[in-house]
Length: 99
Image (tube, rainbow, N blue to C red; front, side):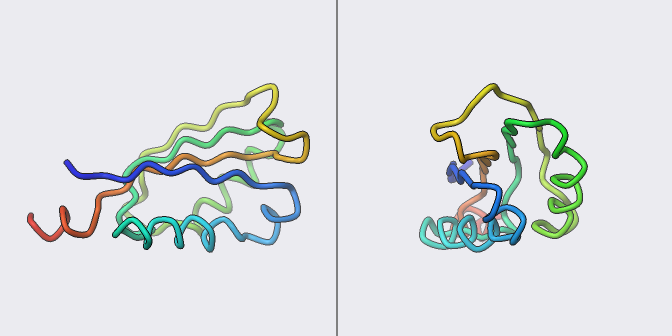
């Protein structure tokens, strides 16, 4: 299966403005895919108290059938301001067209 793996790290301000789909979407399009082709996400949080907000936002970022996902808490990310990191695996459009 062809795929794209990308990483999107966000600060609190960017997260609450729902900007993940903009950055994630741009990276996926550059790699020949889209949010609709995401099959798996791993979401790393520095504070699990944000879990409910992430679950709510996840429903806005993706559409059914939703990608498989894992949400985990980590002690820190690359920067003290970073509070979420999203790794997404998506099928490249050229691979999806072959089915």
